[in-house]
Image (cartoon, rainbow, N blue to C red; front, side):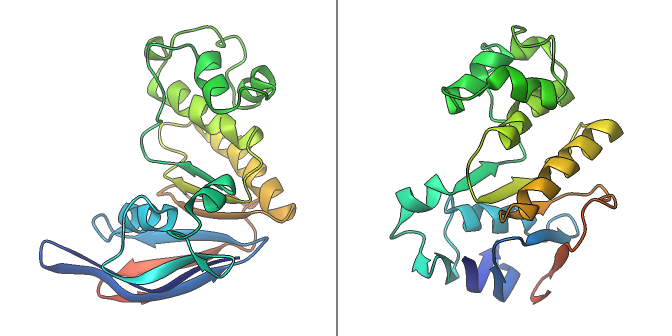
Length: 203
């Protein structure tokens, strides 16, 4: 379904990774691991098409993502390290921007924000702002989720809820690629880990 082929990346005359190849199929759950500065976020941005590798290719259904950008993005849910929300809008308004036809009230409740629907985002805590973005996990029809540190500022019960939702997604034939410094609980069964340790990379 999704392939990284011989990816390489250099920053400031330093090789973050090279010759990186892996494949993600329906039902796969891949965690990118590595020390700070190993290139985890950089790799995720390459996989989404937000940045270009110095070498290699990223393919969706056998096609380079640059050639089928619009089609690929229809199947992609990307949530970066920053929540990506508008602080001047309410929680509900933020979510409706991405999913105007979805049951946004229900998604916010499932994400732990019941009762906060009409509160402006700038009045919420960092964890609550993060939950606004993560409520999209209950609305998106995308097959591939790429998530950069989704559990940042989320408490233990919230992590468990989000992990259950991710487990449902892969059980239904979706795929997930994520980074996280938090341990994944028993619900994250069958997860594969790809360790970045420049310049060598192993899966």
